[in-house]
Image 1 (cartoon, rainbow, N blue to C red):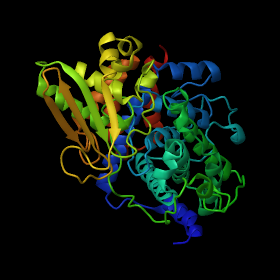
Image 2 (cartoon, helix red, strand yellow; image 1 turned 120 degrees about the horizontal axis):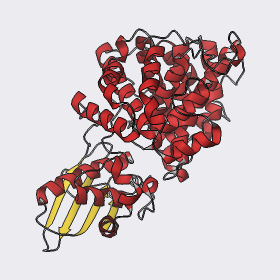
Image 3 (cartoon, rainbow, N blue to C red; image 1 turned 180 degrees about the vertical axis):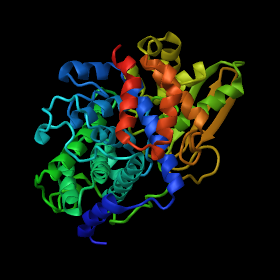
Length: 470
């Protein structure tokens, strides 16, 4: 396949691709919607979301603001706690950009700032207001497929390790594909939307551990809605922006990358539900530390801990001595210390008073980390990643555990009970209307069966309202 074939393949995928397994597609989309909305509601209580609302006047789930602004504020909230799902193939958090964008453009918002009948000023200018849940399922999976295909063409690992935040770079184009699908863009306008979105894609990993990191997800959602809205109105962009000589691939490929343009299998399971509200690169190690703690059963004192992960597995974990909860989410040392001490890593683990606890601060200084191509325990072979945690006790004994895939990974899929517990915890954390958790959960998990995505968005906003008012 030549580079010039890529954009057309992406356009065709966004416009017409269907998941080969409708049952799996419906389940996957339902989990993604439930998980992302729960994370966004929990994010209402985050200082980043509050600061953003003060600065812009835009709050998550606010149906009175333009669709692109709704998408940005809600995407920020969805990623604020770093609790949202992960795609191994793109090293990104795709749903934090895609789901808020889809919810944003599905609403008619009759109470918006636009004058009635003034289409140019209308909050939603994508034509997606009559979308059904089934339309949303198709759009979500088309966006995920486009993101995965683009990541394969890009050489995603080199792109990521060069410093780009894929949730924002790949996520902008993937979300544009999803929104364009929901809006029913023809192929010419879809190509234009990709040209706009690819030029707006941005995001540096230097901002990991700051409030700007989740803003990347919100900005990806915003730019996707903007790109589709502009394309629908006849705005122009270079038709070969993604694969032209000065385009997306040329600019974003990492050093030394010569990856062919090939399609990763978009139908493979590739969304992992996070059961800990911190960087996903800590999760396998956290599960291993959990097993170490269970083995010790509180009968021994830990002198030191060593964590070994696959090459590149420490790349985003840039805060070995975190000063606050935002940095602690990107600290292997802190996450392991918290798991070994408390037996859990929850939303409360990253509260200021928890991060400053003397026992955690002491233990994290005794946690060391390393990367190795061959795991120090278990089989030499591994696929995508692994984590080995070795605890040395004060009596000289060692306890070692290895986990290659954390709980909630696509190969260890989350069940309804575990997902519902996470949704409940997120609503309680935000002070939202927890009495309606069951209704919200069932609606989102069964989004494929809903007659109106706008009604789904209205329910989400209604349930989230108590949290937003805090």
